[in-house]
Image: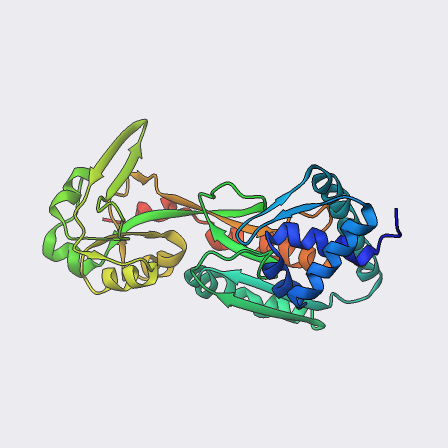
Length: 311
């Protein structure tokens, strides 16, 4: 068996993690030909085939599975070594890349990021706000913020908090159309909701062990909660909205929580997703700790404290 180039082991691991040579090339900023030569050289050195490749698919051989496990541990050891070196330095430094949904980024992340930047002046932070599904491994992000429930994923998912939804409307609308007294009253009201691909809209409420599901017929659908909030503020109808997004409007009387004795079952978890590594880098640990400290208070004050003031 020839001497194995350690770099080729890391390249092989990245190809497997990314699901192909092209994706790994983009992540590593390496030509496909260079990566192919590294894999071929590794197979020659080990005297065994690691990958079964075709124009469309890539599959690990039995030997490839074994080598990949060792490669992962090598990569983890390198990350731990980097983290250890970073811990010896007086400042968190480097380049941190984060992807976040638009509304979360604008409403919850944007207000707190300046404080994180001031705490870590040697760290460069890049944030991409997008509602598309981002793969942190293939696209080289340290963290991806995603709203749940989550599909099965090989990524580590750290829950940062839970978003609660409340039905609310403007005083103008309620004065003109009346105040819903029971969940079923919503069937006679103008409703604002997020569009559903199946064309059905169900709002479910609970109270003292009682559960009621109402099928509503929205007058206005929008996939952005800020747009839905603005429609409610304009008097279009009753909207089911994230509490953190309407808390200030409820406090100032621009919106009023309806059905105050009932609780909506609609919730969304907020998760920070990152690649499955044994040890996070110093910059990543600092950012995750910051989110865990800052995000829960932003979601606190579940609306029951204000419902007594609602109509």
